[in-house]
Length: 306
Length: 302
Image 1 (cartoon, rainbow over the protein chains, first blue to last red):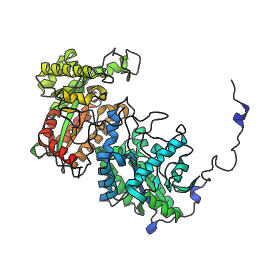
Image 2: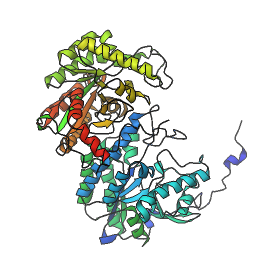
Image 3: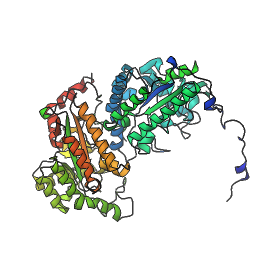
C-alpha cells in the first residue's frame, strides 16, 4: 500500500487562502482603528454562560467542561452548574464594582432553564449573545445541515424571545463549526461571530448570506484552556492576560491604532471562591494602566466598522 | 438518560434568605477525611474500572494503602493540634480491616458518615434493593463501632446512579454530598422523604489538586486560604460553608502535611468561624433555614 500520486499535487497552492471566507491580512498593516475617547485598548469581557446536559454526546469530541466521568456525572454537571448559580454573581459583583460591562455568551437552553438568571444578566446591562443551543449541541461535519439549521434557529428564537433585538452576536459552543455554520448563522440574522481564533482585531467574514464581523475571542488565552485543560495556576492565567494587555497596549501606542483585549472567562472557573479575588485584581490591574475603553462585543464591532 | 439531576431548584446567589450560624459565625468550616479501602482485586463494574493497570495494580493500591498505615495518623494529629474535628467519609469495611483507625476517630470525637463499603464498589448500575442493602450495612456498621447514627452520605467515587438520592431520602439519610452546586446547604428534591445537600468540594479537594492539577503544596495552601477568605467575606451577608475534603494517602504524605497545618492555622486564626461537622451543619440548616429556602424558591427567588 502506497500513497496515490496526487498526494503530492497541490491544487490550492497559490497566493490566497485555501477557502473563500476571508483574504489574508497582515495585522501590523491594518487601517488604523480609533476607539471612543482615544482609548488605546478596548476591553471586551466575554463571559461563557454555558449549560452542560448530563446526557451530552462525547463524540466526535468532548468540549472543555463536557462530561468526563461515567454517566450520570453529577461531579461534572454540578460543578459547571455552580457557575450559573453562584460564580456568575461573584463576577457580576466584581464587574459592577468597577463599572464594567461585558457580553454573556449564553447557551440558549438557559432561557428555558434559568429565566431568573436571564433577568439578572439583562439587569446587569450585559450584552446577550447566543452561544448555541447548549454544550450538547456542538457544530461539526457529522451534523446534517438541516439539523444544524434547526438548532441555530431554535437557539436564536429562544434568545430573541427573551432579549429581542439586542441579540446580534453568535459564538458556537467550544468554538465548534462545520463548513456551513457561518452561512447558517448569518442567514439567521446574526451580524457578529466569535469562533475563528486567528486575529487580535475584527475582520469581515464572508458567508452565503452576507458578511459577518469576526470578533477576536481567544482560546489559547482563555480560562477554560489554561485553568481546566492545561491545569495551570490561577495566577498563570491572570498574569498571561496582563502580559497580553501590555503587548497590545504597547502596539496601540506604537501604531496609533486601537487594539482589543478580550477576556474569555467562565463563571464555573473564575467565579469559584478561590479565584474570585484574582479576577477582581486582574480587572484592577488592567484599568490601572489607563487608556482602556470597556465595551460589549456589539459596541466594539460597531466602532471597528465605523 | 437524564439531562439534569433534577434534585435542586435554581437559587441565584443574591437576596437569598439569610443563613446564620451559631455564635454569629460567618462561615461553617468542616473537614471531610475520606478514609477508604480500595480492593486489590475489585469486581467488575461495566462503567468504570477502578485501576489503570492490570489487576493487581500494585502501585496504585499501595499508594492508597499508605493512607491507612501512615498518612491517617499524621493527618489526625495535625487536626487535633488545632482542635478541628473530622467528619469521616468512611468506606465502612475499614471498620473491619483497620479498627485502630476507627478507634482513633472516635477518640477524637469525629463524626462517621458513609462513603459506601469499599471505594471500589461503585453505585453505577446497582438496582435500588442493592443500594438499600449497602446503606443499611453502613448504618449498622457505624452504629456498632461508634454508637453514631448514619446521617451523611457520599457515594464511593461519586458514582451515584440516577436513583441514589431518592433511595437515600427514603432510608432516612439527613444529608448528601454527591452534588457540588452551591456554597450553602440547599434542599434536595426527591420522590419521598427529606434530604438536604451540604457543600462538599472538588475545588479544594486534595485529589483533584494533587493528582489531576499537579498542585505543589505551597499553592495548595494559597488556594485553600483564598477559598476560605472569599467565603468568610461572603458569609458576612449570609452564612457560607467551606468543606475541605482530605485523603490521608495524599495530604498525610510527609511533604504535604505541613500544608494542612498552614491552612488550619489560617482558618483558626479567624474568630467568626464555626468549626462544625457535617451532621451539625445539616441539622442546623434543617432546623433554622430549610423552610425559608423552600418558601423563597416557591416565590420564584425574588
